[in-house]
Length: 264
Image (cartoon, rainbow, N blue to C red; front, side, top):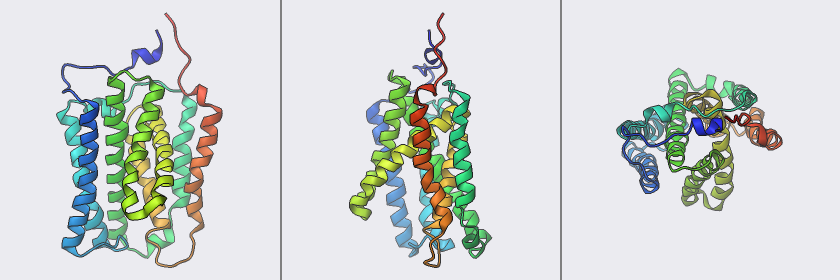
């Protein structure tokens, strides 16, 4: 018997059924809340600029907060809060390099000078909003997504693959506003999804990956979307370089992520 067999998530009488179609519907509702409520609130408040405190509150805090409530409310209703928040699947300790690289990239990538000019309230709201993104997306895709894939008997390799592909695929909805540029973005997001999946495994839960996801988005926004000047912020390069760096490391050590099989 392998260690992977021992830790698999199986059906439980305390959990309500959660099929692939129901998961697809949940993802659609999650996206609809973010996109639909976001546009509605922005129009009603006449705020669409995330460079302002009001813009962050109406355009991010409200729709992302509602989406977050939906994700964890659904997890509770389905009886899946524990498997969403906890992960007992074993992994080797060297995989801690993934969150460590993210932490370094985040610390360097934040545009501290730009934030200093924004004021405390703006920075606090942007931090909260990006944490809503991190906890919402990780709860939906690395929480509910990983859980439903495991319950349907997929191997852990396929769980990692398909949860990451689904995560990237939903970002193809950005094609409406960004055109063909949404395709490479979806590919990059799929890769990011795999990294956050590994953070979930090595930290044995959905907390660290959620926090890092939010902080990573916060870092990117401070170096790109909220800059008042047109001057390029060089710190933004490090978060971007996280993807190829971790891709190379994981490609080399791809066969040493899970512990060696234990037979009995």
